Image 1 (cartoon, rainbow, N blue to C red):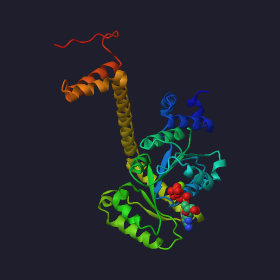
Image 2: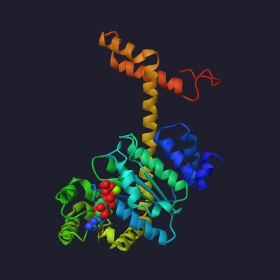
Image 3: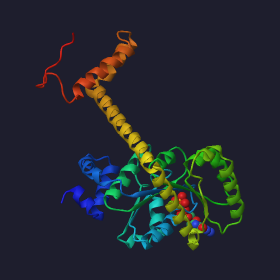
Image 4: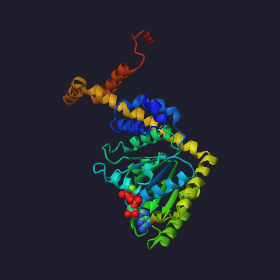
Length: 331
Ligand SMILES: Nc1nc2c(ncn2[C@@H]2O[C@H](COP(=O)(O)OP(=O)(O)OP(=O)(O)O)[C@@H](O)[C@H]2O)c(=O)[nH]1
Ligand SMILES: [Mg+2]
């Protein structure tokens, strides 16, 4: 069986191999991804984000068990942009999710062990597609909510859950920094800790006050959980169901996915074009020669830019004049 057929059949080994190819930017992934595309778009994608140690993995584990009780298969992608080299998250998640790892209806993949900082969001998007095509009903992306990467990742999820914990000074701070816009659901985890009720009230107050939320039809619910005790997890599942129902009824699900597809397509074209330009300019030290000429005023950068693009597009265009296609002469 070829790669795509094996992934479609849900063979874990084939899924793992394809994901490794994607991580290594191995070109063997491309034909496979092309064949998988028509089989994607069926999974529901949940993002779980929050600060380090907030309980994201524990919540993911408990939520997954609930989903399994409802006969849904689950793919889990644990993204850890903060520690790409240690692989610590992988080990931790394996331990915390140990019960799930023997369940054939669950596939867990950690994205912490390799490089690709910057391309992390893209790689995560691709991995989600692989799991989607492999037949997983729900895909959960766990990501540490720091920096810019998280915003990209949130662009992948249909429902984004932001996990806050009591006793963290930065919770309300981070709510100012755009978290209001990205949260579809707020989770107050570690509700067994002091200050949980206060945090809950503060978050509810913020939501009420937030003008951007008032404009929208969806006000994020605030769910209290004690993940380690499996408390509030059913409420969280219900909240996700509620958000999904809203997205579907309002047409937002399709609209959000259209926007995501637009971004992905543009990014893909952009990246490939960039790669081609770099390759073209590196050939025979072209760039160095151009730079010398520009530096010594034998050329100007503006016409050089136009010339380079023209050359490149002529080389790469699928229908070059002279290849059996008659060039049309200008008037
Ligand atoms: N008391 C209490 N502890 C919790 C709760 N949820 C998780 N923990 C503990 O908090 C610690 C961190 O939990 P994780 O699930 O690994 O948190 P995480 O957000 O995935 O952590 P990173 O992936 O490292 O950012 C673990 O020791 C959990 O047992 C909770 O509701 N109450
Ligand atoms: Mg974790």
